[in-house]
Length: 327
Ligand code: NAP
Ligand code: GDD
Image 1 (cartoon, rainbow, N blue to C red):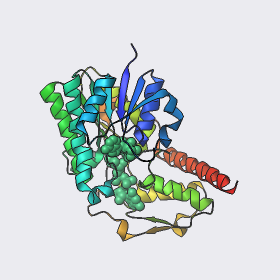
Image 2 (cartoon, rainbow, N blue to C red):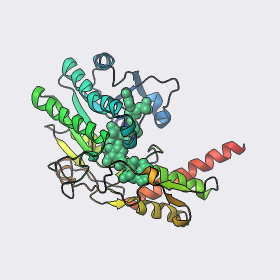
Image 3 (tube, helix red, strand yellow):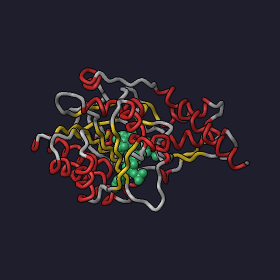
Image 4 (cartoon, protein in one colour):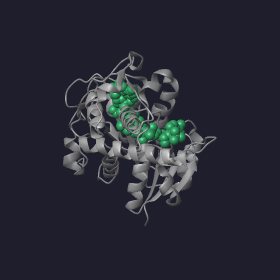
């Protein structure tokens, strides 16, 4: 029997990678999309003919129940969220509605419609915040430092709670930062690689960033969606940290990205205190030993390769845009 998966947040970076991965495994892939006056399906454009998309919203409980009743998926991947940390200070309540309560709405729908559905929750290393130990693993306590991080802690614990209270096969994947050419341009990695491409091609001069000393454990999104799927294929539901185990600073990203196209970053990068966050997470580094041992998962793309991949993709895209403009 063909397995059916439902992905919320299918139009986002991870949604696009996961959809492609599941199609490759022979799944019938359904995606939940929210209504907008203009569709933003660029990331899944090449897969569109093979996906079944449905309108529903994390804010609307009935729409989610109806969707799950109609699709009757075997697996649900809850990737939808307000995922940009700075926006969570500007819109803390909406972030809580989407990123925290949205998880309960998804779990309630699963509980009501079919408790045999396997459920994945997109949890985040942002929950570790002001880190209590290094590296962080599944036992490390949380100290979130943004409304987004707080909302993700709620999403994590409600997932654990539905597993323990209702026996739902619910897993929380605690994923560290993962990037790709599909990353939103407001996140620091893509902001850098987009700027590098534009500066190299002469259509931008400066790149203004915030805290260059922040350190993150950055991996490749294509590797991380495989871990999501692996979690739902186990005999027992559980929570897993997914990370590379290496950390690098924003400054290192900048150096590598500019260096890849033979530019000196010091001539282009400025730091603006306005871009500093009310509370910063200075450092994150994950310990994915449990995932390596139980899921047999490991990251394939190393840090310098990730930087080069993203710069090259942006160079290609900007060149194409310029050629189209001049045509
Ligand atoms: P993303 O690119 O920002 O995508 C977010 C998705 O959520 C988009 O498809 C968006 O739809 C959808 N969405 C937002 N609000 C919604 C609502 N009210 N109803 C329905 N859909 C809604 O995020 P991502 O990087 O792919 O991350 C996927 C998930 O993993 C998120 O939950 C994120 O918080 C979490 N996470 C990400 C990372 C990372 O490093 N990427 C690390 C840990 C955890 P629109 O296209 O309509 O905006
Ligand atoms: N966005 C951004 N823009 N970040 C900057 C900038 C800038 O101009 N300059 C420095 N930074 C620093 C931020 O202060 C932060 O310490 C770091 O770069 C990474 O920022 P983001 O790329 O915005 O990612 P994030 O770590 O805040 O959040 C991402 O990873 C989480 C997992 O830890 C998001 O994908 C979250 O959704 C995810 O949960």
